[in-house]
Image 1 (cartoon, one colour):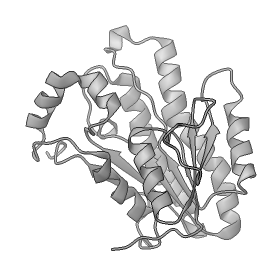
Image 2: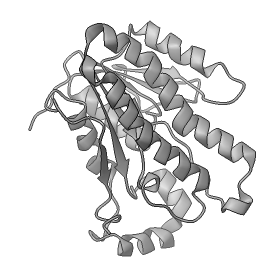
Image 3: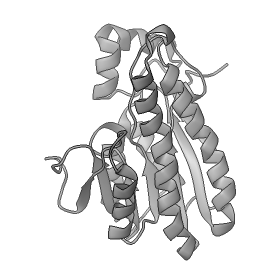
Length: 243
């Protein structure tokens, strides 16, 4: 199956590394006009000229909502939105402080809701659009120390359903993709080599995902090959959450 995105405008939040970077590259490779966001003032060195870069730092006290609106207006809206930006901090519940809770929920849940609100207004005019929220298996199951993170991802999966109901009549499809353990720089930092090997043994397929395993799911759901899937959470975890 070939998916093409000729001249479709795509916004990928948190698109500077890991899954977001791969998604952005694949959209661009298939003809899309891609814009990514990141926290740095400078465009990443890997980022080619045909991928636009915009700084969007989501923190309390910053006018990030106004900045998000400015990005949407600058490109006169987007046809496809990938809410990928996310953060995590592993702490058990008795170690979790109000700053951790605030930052994680703000980045992983509040921001996708607000950015979707902003982007969808332009989509309504065209009666066309695709929105993909990047969730996590920790929105479905959990693991020690993932308290605010699990809350944020469970919430994101929940609002995906509401977004799909609100926007469906306008031909705007909204879905979530929830990866399991993906071999990225962040995963290696959190788990370490020993943890990576241990986790492989718990996955029925005996391996972690790569970013190449996740991006095709996102591209399909955001393509015109998908005409009727909306409000769903697609889990890509090698069978980890099989009951």
